[in-house]
Image (cartoon, rainbow, N blue to C red; front, side, top):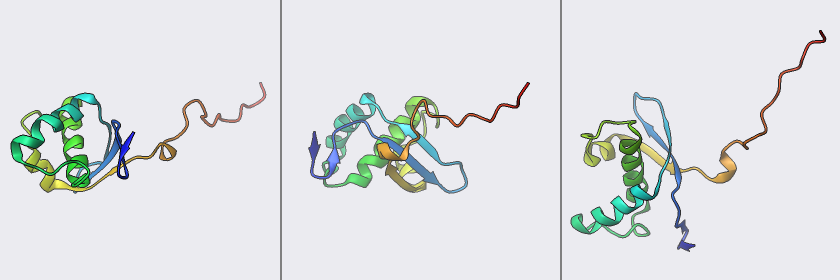
Length: 107
């Protein structure tokens, strides 16, 4: 299911911040629900009207949830530090179960 060009799912995102390693985070339902509960309180636009804000918020919520950042790390701070956030498409992730095996030497 999608609204406009955005699929309604829990996207995996890549987050680029200055001076720290990039993060790849799988967002989850709790992050989406937090967006649904927080957006109206701040009178933010709907996710399809502000997709970068939505992805930035989801990445922040997921980073806090998994412990990549401390729980006191505010969204405002995260928003100001994130240089790039993007959804990782399925074709950008390596296929599971297809590792390259090293050549075995005869023994």
